[in-house]
Amino acid sequence: MRNSGSLILSAFIFLAVTGSAEAQSMRTGGQTASAQQAFGAAVVISNDNIFISESANQTSPGYVYAYSRDSSGEWSQTARLTSPDATDGDGFGR
Image (tube, rainbow, N blue to C red; front, side, top):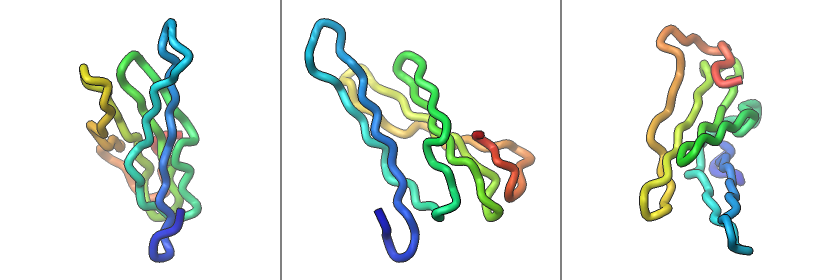
């Protein structure tokens, strides 16, 4: 999806519900990025936590977005992680 020349990047996560034909889903809040950034190139799911990478281009160091599911089943972004000594083009999150 484009927004004023930038891309709005999202990830969609579908989780099977044990004993049910339905699946729970989550769409991350859109991250504004350039076309060269690889949002979602790496995804890790651990229990009620999801980590989604946004590998960098030459204008940012790269990030990992953390999402958590609360007791009611709602997902929310809980952190945006990067290296403390990051510089543009590092590729953090690959």
